[in-house]
Length: 180
View 1: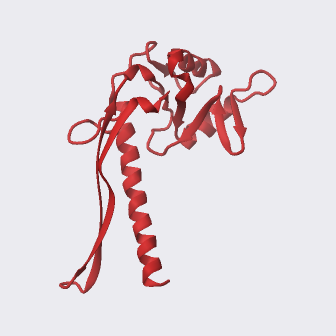
View 2: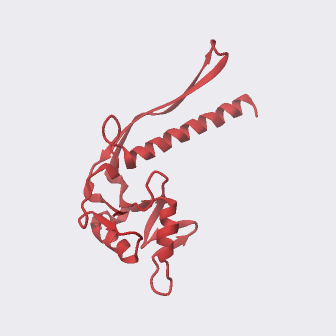
View 3: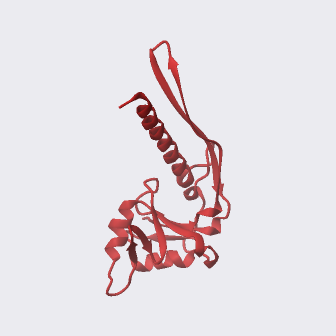
């Protein structure tokens, strides 16, 4: 690998890590010294949240969909991790009775809502909403710099981004989760 190819690869890796951190902030940020994530908001059972006993049923998914106000349907997407999709929702699939999950050209849909997979969401948690109603500010876009360090006779690389965000309209989001 040439030096230029290595630097390009390394820059791409660092940029990818920054993007993963921003994704984590959008879902899990505490709002204290960092972005406030969607899951840090207060959700109320049967108002904007569905609490599931131990495993999902088709009725639980329908309840979740029913809680989202219709005005947000146009841009709504369903986020969950891969285990939730394949271990919980795909297990409910019964094409003879109902078409809960569809796959079209490698894209999954649950009751018509596009499914986006994220490792930043805990297993058993589903977030449905219009993600245009989450406001993020990338004050400094991802930047990767390098500098030669004479003390170690090596190049050092640093990735940096400044991101802040919060939910602009909480009623644009609903969630379901497995709880005791």
